[in-house]
Every structure is written in C-alpha cells, then in structure tokens.
Image (tube, rainbow, N blue to C red; front, side):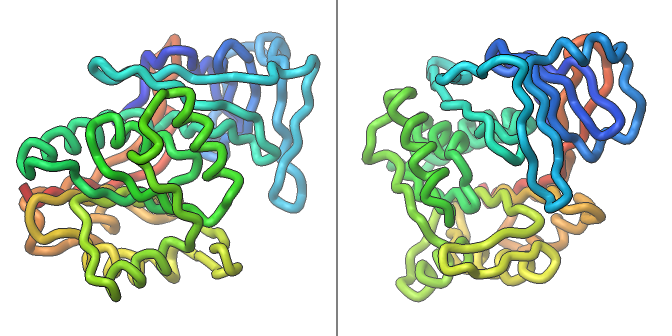
Amino acid sequence: MITQDLEQYELLDSGLGRKLEVIAGVKVVRPSPQAIWKPLLKESEWNQASSNCLRTKDGGGKWEHKKEPPATLALPFSVEDKKLQFRLKFTSFGHCGVFFEQVPVWIWLYQEVKKLKEKLGRAPKVINLFGYTGCASLVMASAGAEVFHVDSSKGVLDWGKESQALSRIDAKAVRWVQEDAQEFLKHSFKKQFTYDGILADPPSWGHGVKKEVWEFEKHITILTEAMLGVVNKENSFLFLTSHTHGVQAEALRNLVFDRRWKEILPGELGVKHQNDARILPAGIYVTCKSY
C-alpha cells in the first residue's frame, strides 16, 4: 500500500535520517529513521524548508521555525464523493496529526465498510484502536460505519473532534473513547459486545489512561487474542499494522491466523517520492476478511 499523488502533500526527498516534505503548503524537514540512504537533492534545497524538527536526547523533539507556521492548517482528503478535512498541527515529536502512509489504509477501510454495510443491511460497528487524531475513524464514518474511536490521550481525541467538525460528519457517527486499548477490549468481551471491523495501529511503546505500559513485543499477542474475541466470526474485517523494528509482515499474518478468515493478506506501507521512484518504507500490515 503506497501513498502517492495526495492533495496538499509532497515527499520531495529523504536520506540520512530525515525527510523533506511539503505539508499543506509548508516545506518542512522531519526525522525519518528508515532513511539510511543519501539524499538526492542538494543541501541548499533542504535549507529552503521553513520548519525543521530536531530530535532531542530524551527521544522527544523540538521545532525550529524560520517564520511563524500558519496558525490553522488542514489537509483535504477525498474518496469517491466524500470530501473531508483533517486538522494539522506541528507537535514536538515531529508529527502533524496525519501519518501519510495511512492514506491507502483509509481507502481500503472506506471500501470495506461500504461492502459490509450492503451485506449486513445496517451500519457496520467498528473499532479504531490507538486511533490517534481519528482520520481513519472519520473515513469509516463517512462510508456509513458506527465508529468507536479509542485512544488514551484526551488531547488527540479533542483534535479528532476538530477534524470531525471540519469534515461536517454527524457528531453521533463517532464515539470518542478515552481508554486503554486492551481495557476497552476486555470490557467489550465481558459485556459480550461484538464488532464488524477492527483497525489497530499500535505504537512500539506507549502508555494508557492509567499509565498502563504498552510494549509491542510483550503485548501484541494478548491484544490480538482480545481482538479475535470480540470481532464477529462472519462478515467482519481486521486491519493490523506494525511500525516496530524487526517485526516482519509474515509475523503479523501468523499473529492473526484464524480459520474464520477467508482472506489474510500481509504487506508493506510506504510513501512514494514526488519526483522519483523511491519508496520511503513506513511499516507493515495485515488485512483479514471473513466475507
């Protein structure tokens, strides 16, 4: 799944642990650990960036702006006849609220939600775990899903609501749940709640609402078993990603293997450079469908 030709976004170059992008008209340099090669463009072209995010020793980051960044930015996104707007903000970790490698994921989710809605004759009930600012949740809602968006950070939930308002999506279409992903699944299983689709985009490490520690290698098996415990055995999908160093796509396939699935497809996520054929790798995924 490769992102390319996205409105208001360009990956101009990458290399030596950095990437040069244009995001909603703003040229920026951000960290990119995967970029172990040399850049193609001259340093003088990189120096034209108005904002540069530098990693700090504690693992965080800080922005250096040559001029004040625009106070309000938004990324337009269209799929079929739906036109959405995602709020953008530059954060200390070098994020902006959108992970651009996820664009093909959004399109896949949109299409599958539409298929399920037709099959089921009702709005599919889906979960977005580790949902961040909610781009995928809003895409699924625009396709007709009832979405439970789960994240432990109130700040990103509020951020997602801003994008929901910009996109003019009914407030009732997405339930913004501040909760640890594993606790949400435990509660659902206990209450015998089931879902027609699950998207999980877990980080390598993180913390829950009550400071629960998340480490991908330690907890992904437990999380996967919990997801299989609440996703419907028929007419359902599961989309799982990983951005953890050393984990390969076939490992994800083995994690989710279950005889209910009629299709299990692993693959890679990436972003194509604007003016050359290079792909910036950005993680792996596996898709599962029981229909």
